[in-house]
Length: 102
Image (tube, rainbow, N blue to C red; front, side):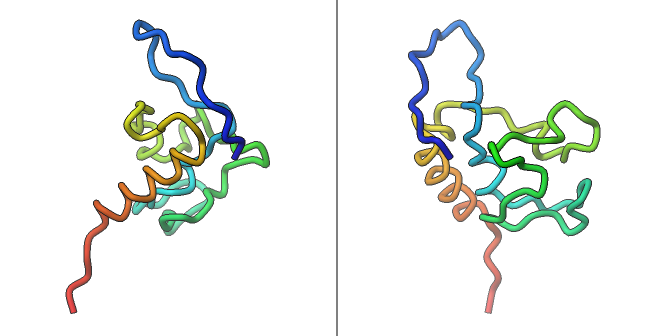
């Protein structure tokens, strides 16, 4: 991850991903199978489709996981840096993960 701050945002423009961040492709779990990951993806596991620059090789393709297609970046989950996005998304994953009862 690069940890480059986002430029000043124009409120009329849609919120856009930081190129090379990849936090949303690492921090959350994906519980359904998708191309190349028949068991989904564990939280904190790097998606098999991230390239070395943290860009999705399936972006815009029908093989992309539904979770990914429906996920929309927003300031509350992306923060201002890649590192901040990873912290926020890791906390969100932990807060929304089902707990196993003893």
